[in-house]
Amino acid sequence: MKVEICHFSGFKIYPGKGKLYVKSDSKVYRFIGSKQESLFLQRKNPRKIAWTVVYRRVNKKGVTEEVAKKRSRKTVKHQRGIVGADLSAILARKNQKPEVREAQRAAALAAGKEKKKAAETKKTTKAPSGPKISAPKVQKKGGARTGSRF
Image (tube, rainbow, N blue to C red; front, side, top):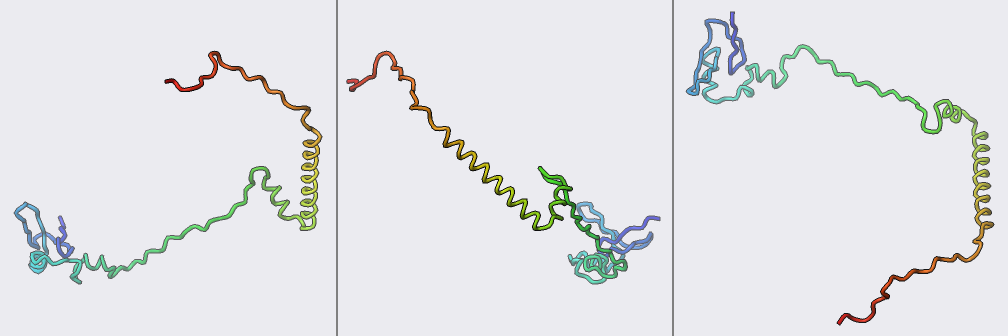
């Protein structure tokens, strides 16, 4: 048993029922009754006629099943090691007491200043040994051209 669907209303058309409308371009339209055929020929929009299936679908009428909202996954934060320090070193620093951290910072600053001072003294002791002698300039053969060509 072949069940067709009404082109206008969307209702099922069982065998032996309905009307068949064929346009001059040989396109076939099936209607369940003359009411649907008449409205189609008047070029009515089935989306605006309340009793059609298309209207009910567009305006979400009679939907019995509520579609459950899709759950979004919460992002999970992970701690990872960075270049120069692995995770255990980072966690050890995080759990240090502020006094210890301040002492380490002061020691690092002092070491940095000492290193800078050593570099400065090294620079001053390494004075130039004498005036630099540059190689004599070599002149090209033919000499320099002077004056105009004419």
